[in-house]
Length: 79
Image (cartoon, rainbow, N blue to C red):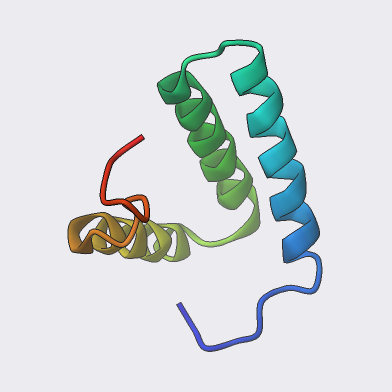
């Protein structure tokens, strides 16, 4: 990705997503189902908003984060 500043409303969007996740966990929806639904929705939104190559770059960045261990919890465990 680039060194651009994050969008001004990114924090607000993140807070809404956090609340949605909290709600679904409270509804006892499986974590994998929540994550899969959020990822699918995110990809669909990206597909309407950016070029395919940008989506590939985003996914490659995510893969690199997984492989480097960056996405693991602070205690080193997986959720």
